[in-house]
Length: 253
Length: 54
Image: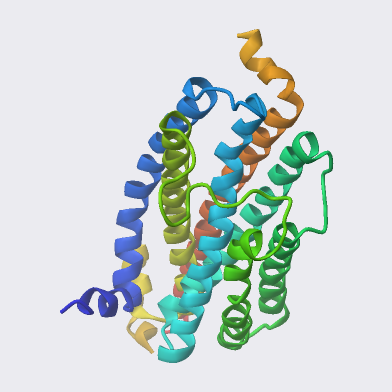
């Protein structure tokens, strides 16, 4: 019973239709959550006792870094599902993740550099957290490059899925890098066992931003995956129905 | 207001971060919509050519 929704979502016409209906239900809450998070983070949260107002970078840096990792996990798991069950929808979802993930990884690195300059005295250091996050950016770019290099979309899906799945090993390395090695980067203050180490006035806006960015990603993913599905099922009759295009008798072939 | 904009002396680090974030968020919305529209237009063309062929 629990798997019924999974099988339904595996059907391209169903996914295309439901994704189109669901996307606004993620987009608008995302905008509201981010607006509330920005008011809280920039206006209401007190300045940090050590970093002053500079710490407010956290309200965009942490959500960007969170997306960089979460998007990769979504991409790698969809790619693996695609490889194992040969699901077109899963490949479409995986392919949709790459550009989103790459852009937020680059954003996490850039905002981290702008935070590092005043706090650490340097934009960049070959530190475990920074280096493993840079490697994540290269994994995304490698995935996109590999897809672009293969003309046949089915072959591109399968080859890039292997790269995405193998690269997932980097995700726990990034997360635990600040614990395993001696890093300039601070240890986790929210995603850790036990209580978060921030007071509520700082933490609540951060949680709002994290939730807002996550909902925003889902809306983006649903929109992009619909396009990717159309590219993969170019001759299917359901596309004509979904797009409201009248077709001749031979169109189902 | 000026105090808010100055960000306790960290303005030149804080505001570029927020500006870059707005840019990436906006670009992703644009890219997602453009990709969907392009795929729909391409699918419509294909459907039309199938109709013509049939």
